[in-house]
Image 1: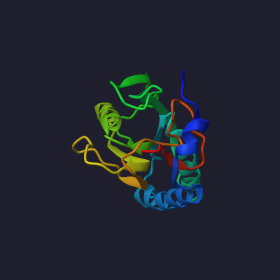
Image 2: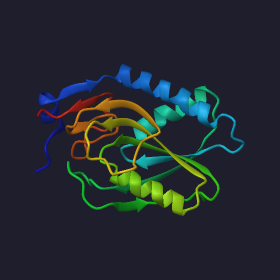
Image 3: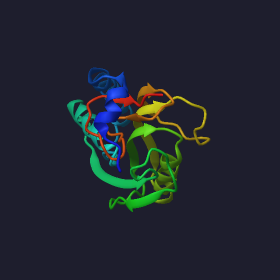
Length: 185
């Protein structure tokens, strides 16, 4: 039986409220705009589905407010498949947009251990992307990250606990919560 989100929320701790996340996204948009504003070709804005969707939408609007044009595509690669622990990477959809010579901005919900972002980044490089940069809403604080995997832009930090909300799921539930929560320890 799938655990219920309502039960998880009763014992969960609010880690970052919506206002904190929205402010972090606006800050990130300013930093990203400064990186890409002089490019003749808009960056390829690749959302990592499903978790990256809420954050990516908000970030795209904030970049639009600053006048930065983007070309959109998405990919779906996952290690979790509805579970709270990861396994091998499964590609469910690869981007259709050619990457050869393009600057790519990967947008995801969280950098935890980095296995997924490591694989995706290398895949983009194998597609001959000129540059691959990473923006994540959250980075988990621990020392288990894959060597060399870092986000170029980070919204907030979260504790080394199972977190959900704002794109991150609890057994495929709660992605649309407008805040980030951590399960009770």
